[in-house]
Length: 325
Image (cartoon, rainbow, N blue to C red; front, side, top):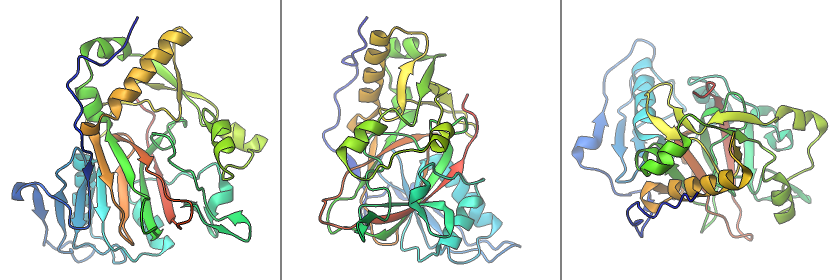
């Protein structure tokens, strides 16, 4: 059985990008808010959708200030609508980063405790910087396409990544809209995957990553016990919007349950290739102090890479989601 996607249209040559003054949709895509709220003064925020398969910029919002209920509700709605939100120039502390993240749900602690921010176990340091011969953070995070913590029984709802130190070049993050991937999936692939489960495991690429770089420590028995393989639906339904999305990734998905190994491999490869077609992608070009909040139920992401001689440091929180269905 073959699972080629050649019956789908040709891929676009360009990936949609963001820049500090990147392209936006027409004025109909701009939402403003000046209302007050009983819990905190409303801020003059605007939500501007990117001219891309995902993404919007939130302007006029200072997350170091108290966030009122009306403003929070609009951010929540925009996150569901656009899947990734960009908050520019956020001069926030780790405490404020954590507090904003917790408005959306409980936070998950990454299994690699070695790279937690000192005093803040909820914050994972993502960095290629080495100090005193030791990495200060996880340097190869995002090397493969993935959805954060899909290997957990309750995968991540969303992640918030805050730029601390950026390289002069490189360091972009790509996002793949998995709702679009499902919506445009050829019929024969839809029929092959709907209703099926797939195995996800944190260890799928771990040995390979250890061979590639010095960033990955050996896992203790306790850490391995925290990341036992789980079965997830190949096609999941977003619990808040009801939209379907593909839920497989090259990093963590190893096998489709109930299929022979060769058929499973061929089908997964076809799904992976289709998911990251250029017309499904948004590329985020980071600016200093950006805070980017993406929906792991709707997207996969990939780190585009940073030159070894340039420094990059980011702080990440991860919000717990629901059991996929």
